[in-house]
Image (cartoon, rainbow, N blue to C red; front, side, top):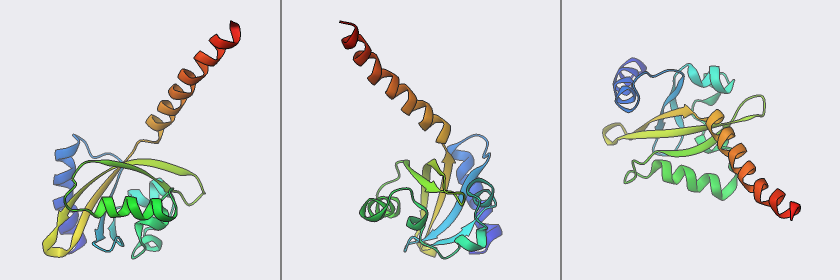
Length: 144
């Protein structure tokens, strides 16, 4: 499938998931987990030249390592699951960003359309909120 046709089909899918497809990682991965097509947002958001990422397994970029990364990629590639999933990717500068991933399978081309929405700020707020919730009872116990 050529890049233009893929982008047209996948943009329609993304608009169905989210009203306005702002900076979102759009890609096409083979059933082997290797990245086959990437939109310019990959370079803009992660900092890697897109050409450097093509034909690399997605798990090489994942925040999780070893078996955890393999399990997440297996889940992403599992055709019987269409639930969104979260996992982080490593940026070229060494930092990590969290993404909410949606996917759609194309059995005819043995490929998976993937879309990752950057949820790093939301995850940071959630973690900060959890820490505050954890610290409140400790302070109350110390005051007693």
